Length: 496
Image (cartoon, rainbow, N blue to C red; front, top):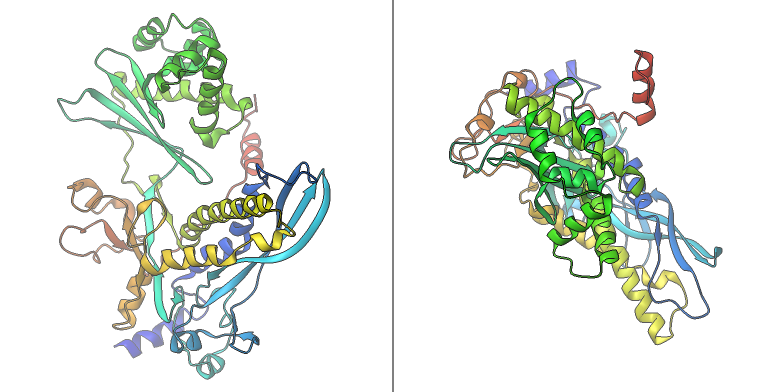
């Protein structure tokens, strides 16, 4: 049966890999994602610097990645193939080399390329030595020609990164609460920007006031936040929420915040809710910093984006009130349009981003320790490449991921060829398997041709652990802001 199945794959899908989406995701991470994470760091500025080096700063530049190599005991370096890594219980990984520049008073004093760590390489990806080899060459290197790849080798074990299904970010979902709850409707939005993924909660309480909760702000009147962002006039707030229909709930909320006459009054009110007891100027600055950094960060994290955030909050209020007061149906969270799959590249990017920041903190600690001792000579000695390598390797070996998630990495099931394909195509939901979540477990009409309608385990994880359809592919094209703006202008819309 397995032999016949392999022949069918060879005949009809000769140039198509069944794990193509995962391979593309990993290639995108290695070619673009690592560079993007490096660029997010911008400049590294230590707090303690040598007296002779004022305005000392370090900046990372271009990233280059080599194919997997091994350094033998005698110091010789050569390339390594997956079968050798399996037999010798090694990790099939590639070196990440970064250009490092040091500046003193805006003058470049040091520039070199160094290895900041190693990252496991996906079998059959562009960074694997097996990529592009013909059947005879694969057999010569001890590989099964029908093996699709899409997994990693860590300490000789074959590990799979399980695809994660999650709600789409930067989109508001409105839910109707059960009877007896403090609010009839709540709206949730996950604002994502780089390493930030901040939940925002809008609640419509029985007193008629709309409250917003995020990070350190718990149940703050949403009109007060809009005024703190610079949209102070009640008339402007009302017109931005809705020009066609006037909602009574908006008047109630405006009356509740009538004492906040200026932007500074609103900021001070927010600072008090945060528990800041410093002088007034400091309280206002702290409130501004929190709003810039943690309120809807996907719209921006600079002071210039405050008004944009205020306008967006007004539109969120309108959409919320349309559902609450006009009875429009709430969004179907189980529709695949409202879901996103995190593939291997996305998961590794989350892991790399967090551990890169840990590496930079370690660099700053080593730098300041050497400066205090008066022994600092070069930046090369403060970069410990084992730190990044060991943290990534540890996460992939144990399956414990960023955010406390477990089971993301698993030993590959090699019972037979079908079970291996099933494991490579697996999708898990982040919902807790001990809770009911009947709707999330049910088969949705949008799963047709995308998820397998049959393959799911019995017991508590039923419906939460799914599998991609055999020939399903996942789109991964990112639409740039310029391309989107151009498309909107072509259909007649104008940028205000």
